[in-house]
Image 1 (cartoon, protein in one colour):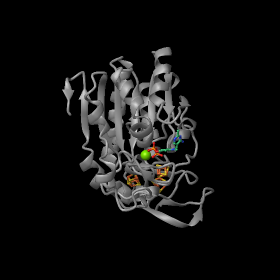
Image 2 (cartoon, rainbow over the protein chains, first blue to last red):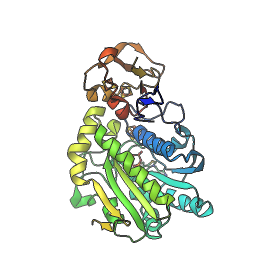
Image 3 (cartoon, rainbow over the protein chains, first blue to last red):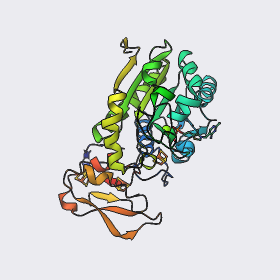
Length: 262
Length: 66
Ligand SMILES: Cc1ncc(C[n+]2csc(CCOP(=O)(O)OP(=O)(O)O)c2C)c(N)n1
Ligand code: SF4
Ligand code: SF4
Ligand code: SF4
Ligand SMILES: [Mg+2]
């Protein structure tokens, strides 16, 4: 759990220890991959809300396919893109549970676009953690719906040509137009300050779900150093310089406050 | 010890090195862990601020700060 105060009742406390809701296991992720950061943030929020025994994560097809192995709370793994449908069933059967989906851009914005749009339109009381790394990581770096114009991937070796394959999808902007959506925020993981802000967004989305307010989504601008063919530090710089301008950060929908930014 | 590295968990990604305000984290190239990575290490525990910036950026939760 990050940032405990140093002295509690005369005892010096550690400043940063591993989240309790994380299994003590080595992940299979590549060095520097932000999937690990996102797992930690989710686990810390679950620790802070004290809901480890009351949470179900629905993991995707994609690099996070084995995500349920790295957390102590319950987890299932859904068919490609179908996590919102699986989460809908779990939440309707067990409405007191915190139920979230964890989905990459290939999973959520390609094969599963219909699933997330309709879960959001129905106002399902679930949270979607959307890991946008502009690429199909698991399968070797093919172009995704969120690949930036001009970005080189295995299937766009000369850069994404928008004349031929069209434009990226901005998921938060798209979903924020739906009345079933209670909360939509885009955050980034390119530095410590933004990582800490990302944790706040996840907590907010989970709280909105526990208050029964409707569908919530947090989109996290993430890296894939392996398929981007970059060092981990360069990949974080690339998020900041290329992704953030195309995918502006911020709260796109907060039904409580009447915010809708389209 | 303020900076505690889990030697087996570190994947040598170097992200912690870049964020340390004291510049006291370096890569070592003497010992590989079981996964085959050279790891980060703290060169000067006394200079560590316990700011935990390194721990926040680490994707593998390999760092704990006392
Ligand atoms: C029905 C089906 N179609 C295609 C695939 C191949 N496949 C596996 S993962 C993936 C995309 C992964 O990309 P993303 O969701 O962005 O996750 P990442 O690995 O980048 O985190 C695809 C197309 C599959 N496993 N099942
Ligand atoms: S392929 Fe990319 S997204 Fe997948 S674990 Fe490696 S760096 Fe992360
Ligand atoms: S806690 Fe701060 S000063 Fe100490 S090693 Fe980590 S980043 Fe450097
Ligand atoms: S950030 Fe973590 S995994 Fe990467 S080099 Fe530092 S301690 Fe090792
Ligand atoms: Mg992806």
